[in-house]
Image (cartoon, rainbow, N blue to C red; front, side):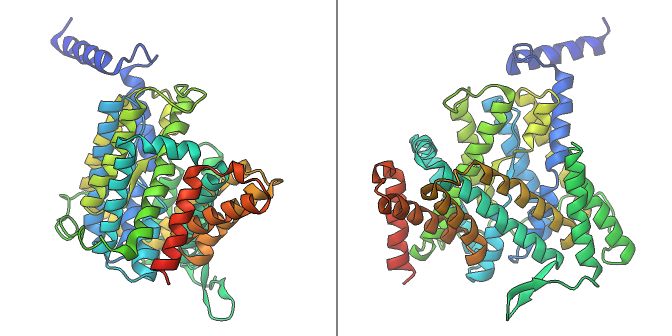
Amino acid sequence: MSNSQFDTAKKQCLFQRFFKLQEHGTTVRTELVAGFTTFLTMVYIVFVNPQILSMAGMDIKAVFVTTCLIAALGSILMGIFANLPVAVAPAMGLNAFFAFVVVGAMGYSWQVAMGAVFWGAVGLFILTLFRIRYWIIANIPLSLRVGITSGIGLFIAMMGLKNSGIIVPNPDTLVAIGNFTHHNVWLGALGFFIIAILAARNIHAAVLISIVVTTLIGLALGDVTYNGIFSMPPNITTVVGQVDIMGSLDLALSGIIFSFMLVNLFDSSGTLIGVTDKIGLTNEKGTFPRMKEALYVDSLSSVAGSAIGTSSVTAYIESTAGVSVGGRTGLTAIVIGILFLLTMFISPLAGMVPAYATAGALVYVGVLMTSSLTRVKWDDLTESVPAFITAVMMPFSFSITEGIALGFIAYCAMKLGTGRWRELGPCVILVSILFLLKMVLVDA
């Protein structure tokens, strides 16, 4: 055996012992392929997240780097400590809520708003530390969980339609169809259908392909300026160290902080359960091996991400793409993390992407998130009415917080009004009372 063959065998032995590859029925090569596959399906976040957060006044180049950094850190930690093929990165949905509602509509500076993200992440970590997170997941009704997920999906889709110009403000009808004589409207629509068609054909990199195609068309039309491909990572001091953590400790922001915490709780926990269930690790109670370590990693990643200036971090459902090609261990997640680190050196590409190129991705995420509405018991009005109110009030009120609040209150009202108060758990009652107090004392 040559020295190179000996070194390769030694490395595989180390991977085998640490990740238990044989026990999970996989190999180093399979894990490498799985990591690259998942990376291709989710790398769009390094283009979309900076675009969205830049609308809150953040430096788009710096956010590109922090997005890569936290995706790399979270994924590598998930691989090392939880040994799961689950990627972690900034969450879609909460970034739009941060930029368009907390900063755009409510008028907070991005520094204060990011501080609220930080405290929401700290709250999530505390819930995880004291195992309250498990209790909340188990005691909030399915209809409300589905309503929250679907409402965020509708909210994100609305932002995508707005960014592409497909819908525009109208003083008489609130919104109206955009001007289809503008090519950005057509390109936004084209981007969405490229994703939808490729995804329907099981092409994992559908979102990335759509962003590349629409950006190249924009380049041909003169909307985009080519600035090269490779460069050293841009300066991040315009974002890192600028988060106003203490300034966000404001009673008026309590509902916002609670919303960041609650939505991240359901989003991340649900994704972890979904991915591990696809691997075959989840039992009938919804738990899986090393669940505690996975929840710690995702909550601490959220704390770290908000501290350096990016939106809440969550496990990514795109991880199932890597699982579908054989990924079974944390080696997959570590490969993803390393690829995100390398991505930091292509920052000129991120600066080229126009808003309409990422609009289709937002609408597509909306489609995926609203698909969970099929799980609602529509023939039971005590379940369907709260789910409906939660979902539609998020885009209609332009607030994820208000949608969650009204959904919880509606659930209590329907159960009490129909004499089914015994179905109300202490968690739902407590959250509803807190939201009512916020509306009376804080919002008044």
